[in-house]
Amino acid sequence: MVKAKLWFRCAAMHDPVTPVVVQPALVGWEAKKRRVDLTIERAFNGEELVRRMKGWVTTDPQQVIDVVKKFGKLKVLDDRELVIVLENEEDVKKLNDALLDAFGGEVDAEPVKKA
Image 1: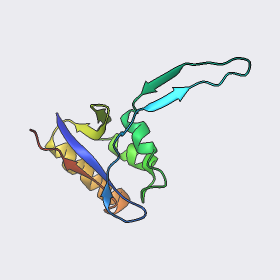
Image 2 (image 1 turned 45 degrees about the vertical axis):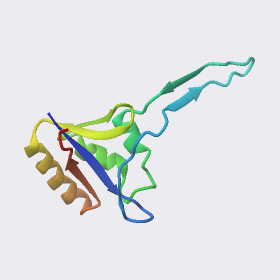
Image 3 (image 1 turned 180 degrees about the horizontal axis):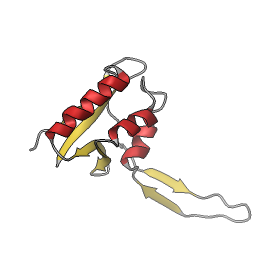
């Protein structure tokens, strides 16, 4: 198993950026006829986190997800950090080639060094 960080280009500054979960999503209910004091806190999964980048990056996040899914799986590690989990280093190269073809350098994957 190999992990890679997914880098987008910021629509405003064109710096490489990757989303992180700063705080889990807090979901609650509003009832029509009574008060509901129930909330659920949960982190995003990898695809949800990437979709949230829409408008903030120079590419369509759903198209990025479609390319990434051909080579690996988007995951959020430790409820915070977005990574792509791939089978091997060769898949990282193939993914980067596909991202370059599809997005012309606006998105890339960087292997995560093992600690």
